[in-house]
Length: 172
Image 1 (spheres, rainbow, N blue to C red):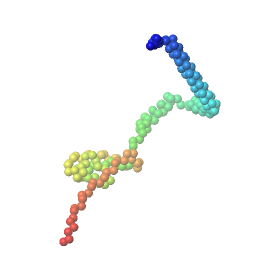
Image 2 (cartoon, one colour):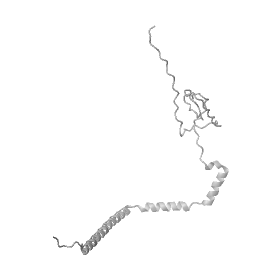
Image 3 (cartoon, helix red, strand yellow):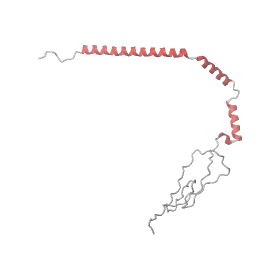
Image 4 (cartoon, helix red, strand yellow):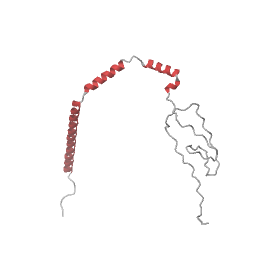
């Protein structure tokens, strides 16, 4: 039988923990130092090739342009406000004009002709139900300039035609 005690030796455990901790901290510090040294060497190499004279010249040119401006912000504001009071539409972008005319409403039960878009409320002839027709859109007062449409309407397929009657091939 064993005569050895089951008590752990706390002195040995504490010593092993202290040695492991010191080794981990020392290794981490060495790794950080090595990485910082490499990064610093790369920065010095990159900065050695940098052409800072061009940047300095550009900054001096830009500062000279800014300081030579004779218009103050208050003067510019007055100028802009006077222009807006003279023509209020000058501050807004022009409305988008399309080259396509507004679609006209079709009568109830009427199928739109080929090339025309069906309006809301128009009823195809095949459905047989009557729905109120949509009111027509107001016509433009001036001729629209020929500008391509930004979102053209989806193409409308023509209504299917009725099938041809069946004929019997009998020799009479």
